[in-house]
Length: 332
Image (cartoon, rainbow, N blue to C red; front, side):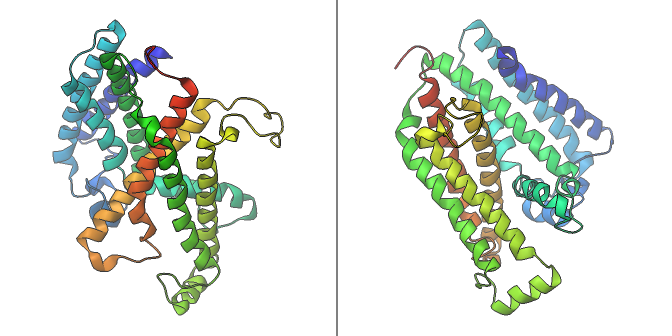
């Protein structure tokens, strides 16, 4: 497991680099720009929506292999307990931010939100004509793969940082509570708009537009309410990052009552959501800046707050992990 954490980013870069070489020689499946089956989103909202395979794929391969070399250098340093300098480590952090936050658009977040709703509605045939596969086309799966790569690069960069400093800096813990309550509040704004639509309250739409869209797509607003409910559930679970029941399963949970909550059970989903909402929020923000007339308080108004939600949730999760696992390196 330790080797996976240390060298995982190297393996990811090797595999993805070989895939990029396949694209460079004309292989199918290029997921960016002209290879994206949803060109309106790819060109309008993705930062790589303008690229063409024949030109971009060789660049992708070169950059990924270069990132792999950075990860290998850090991994070897960590393995040998011989820290290096900040520049290479900072490069790894940059790769993690690009892969996990800047590269993805809003579709991974949509998939993460829609798939649970579809699983619940599947036995009832609702929503009609929508499948899990339709929410996970290859470009979206590719973005999820890149987010996984971001996690691996951040892992090796963090390991090197702890080695270089000889301790785990505790500044995260100071902001943990404030970050947690910020991460609790922001998704409730999103949920409020979706509940308003389900109740026929015009937020961002006129009452007639709400009725017309419901006639064209029956159940759309209740689907939105289901997404809002997931946001509320996320807020409640986020509260657990600063409450005792977030560390020990409550008594009303069968089989698990009284047991300690495994740290990854709380931290990993929080970090995944943090990456997804940050990337989606940045995409919407770029879109609004490029076309201010496109802002709709109901549709993308809450999303402008997501670049605040994502980092706050990440800090909250890291503070929770710090509190549960204690300092690294033997220092307070």
